[in-house]
Length: 232
Length: 357
Image (tube, rainbow over all chains, first blue to last red):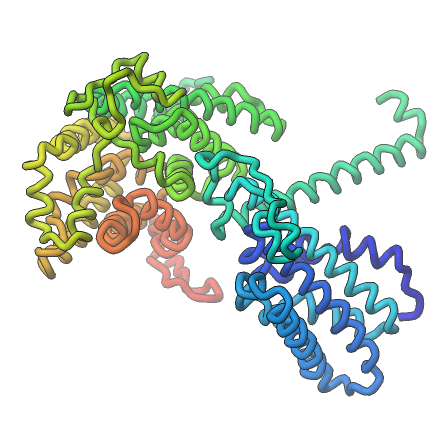
């Protein structure tokens, strides 16, 4: 592709083509790890890092990889990046590493990573690829963290519990208690709660888009024929 | 509006939604009255709260969906839904249990699917199951109304307990609440007691809920027979559910009568009869073909006993109904009755084989 607009990449990643709300990719970690904000943030950071680095690497080597073998090569690149991140988290964020468990190495199989590598980085220059990885990763992470906020408040009645796992010992007292113990809605932290919360987020986005589209077409109508708009 | 038939012999539909729902409400009366008599005013409070919350949620959702509110409220379907749902709730629970459950049932299980006639799952059971897995502790607050050392609550005292958690002085919560028979047997079995002792100890320990379950079951049976007589439900589902319960529990009982309760126990405790007549027969979420109804009901009966015997919850009717709701499209697809004048065609991938001769 010749010209890539960074503005367009931002809009695509964060909103129009959001991995969580529009492409609905990477559902497995999204459902499993979004039960608290801190877990969601941890996985989101790991995913963003993976996407940026593997997009960059794949874009850098794209001229030397024959199209016939590109997929295995790209998967290998992603797998190496994930392994590095996994080992780093094991060393520096050990408790969080144990909480995230199998879902950390499973980032390799997260469809959104390979989708961006194959769909974007394989045909674009390095800098736009890095930026695309960042924006898509952010889009994914934002949905993950929103789910985490909703589910943690409803299910545990807290916000930012166990923040020290991610931010160090300064964050040990960041926990906010929002709901009393009796009102904890356990369904929210169980798998069905994840599906329902994601469905609500998707519905909200679609509703918002529909309203905006209706407003815009209304405006165009009134611009095109002021007489009709006046009658209305 | 009713159009009288002008010429001969045109069949006329007798059952409007409103009429059906009124008959169901009438059929619920004996069971409800027995429940109030045996379990106290908490039952009535639950029903009223659930109906109020359900109607409010229905009206609000219809407003949001830009549908006309009046006919949907007046057809009585929400009242029946909320009533059946409230009868499942513990009589000593807090006020927000019926309110939250009814709102969830109406908003998520009914209106989000498109309203009456479109929902996939039985809304009353969805509301109950959501409460059961979300708020396990308040959902165990069962207790008799008759004085068992703690004292019985009158209507105002029940209200105070439901809303503020305040009991009259001298009455302890532990004196009020007891384990249900299914809970009791499960505890005894987990503790290693043989089933014979476990069920016997129900009667010996003055475990009054055991005898009451029988009365409740009979009252609901009367209501069910009324619905059968008025043609609101057909016999297939209740008969199949009860058969399923008896067959499965009989099988387990014969296999190892030391570990499994008798078929009679399974039939008379928990929600077996209530579920067979009032829950499984929901016309929207049950199977619609005669053979399909038999399969659907039998599946509910078998699953109920399996969940009771091997699952982690004492009763399994609600889960069984939801699981079988899920398989209704499949059951309906494979049990299409043959059209008059057609041979029974075998289902083939390309749609051929529908012989017309």
